[in-house]
Length: 226
Ligand SMILES: C[S@@+](CC[C@H](N)C(=O)[O-])C[C@H]1O[C@@H](n2cnc3c(N)ncnc32)[C@H](O)[C@@H]1O
Image (tube, rainbow, N blue to C red):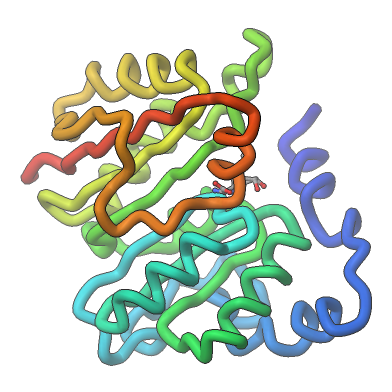
């Protein structure tokens, strides 16, 4: 599969949104859209999006947005930016943001790599990669979000001492993550736990993992000072 095919697969063409969800996606999304008009060639104006924010946090692949919305609600002084390929997930997240009357969050419906490219150097104080797609077959490993190029991108956008949180219920993906980050001078592993973070609201995918008897691991990395 080509990258373009994957983007279309998860994108608008696959949408079966109806009624309220369709309206939310088409109309309300504009209020929460990280890129004006969805134009990913723009540089993000964080000051304009979050004039009051003391920190910017980023969530990659937020699924239905449970974690993003809970963190935004619990941390009003933070500006939360999330991205997700999956159109139904974006619509679900918008519904939760609207219901919770949450204003300190922005979403990008599309590829996290575009969003990360549009973020200034050292602008993100915390990043979340929660239950990334495991791509279990060896020939698909190159699609895993943890890879040298995306880690370079995290290293560029994270502030000194910022935390990168990674959760997965796939032991092999946890090992993969540790191996890739161990090689790097710009990240240090500060916590590897089978207990979630204190402020953890859970995610939909995590609930499924528990139902199916899998035990997640929770990794915290620090972006070493430059
Ligand atoms: C296994 S799901 C986990 C969703 C959510 N984090 C949770 O824990 O419930 C992984 C999600 O990451 C999204 N995703 C994967 N690669 C992405 C990318 N490059 N940009 C945006 N979203 C991505 C997928 O669409 C999918 O919804």
